[in-house]
Length: 116
Image (cartoon, rainbow, N blue to C red; front, top):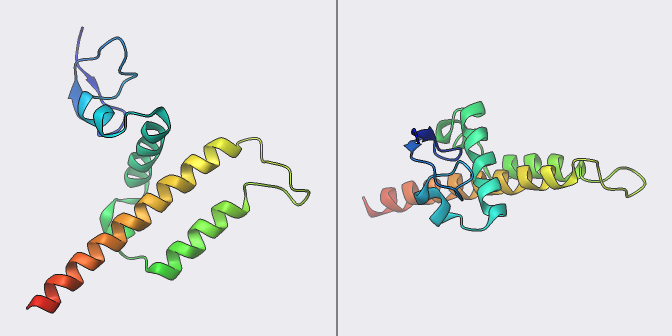
């Protein structure tokens, strides 16, 4: 078998019968399929938007607005789930991860600046 690129981290790996295109390191970090889907969506968002540099430009209020905009699309005006309800939830979960990562990076920078 030849090496394939991991769907999550993009690194080459030798596929196994059960890995579904995800390298062992990523699979171990996200052993439940839902977490793998969120991780894959998160990686796609990073590729689309430019990763931490882009995310770190957002503040808490920005993240609230982004998450609210996506959550608003989950149901229609009659309260019916959108046809892509599950995929929208995966996107929202990945956006929440991005917000947490950006928050943690900002906190780390603030902590270092306070120590100086």
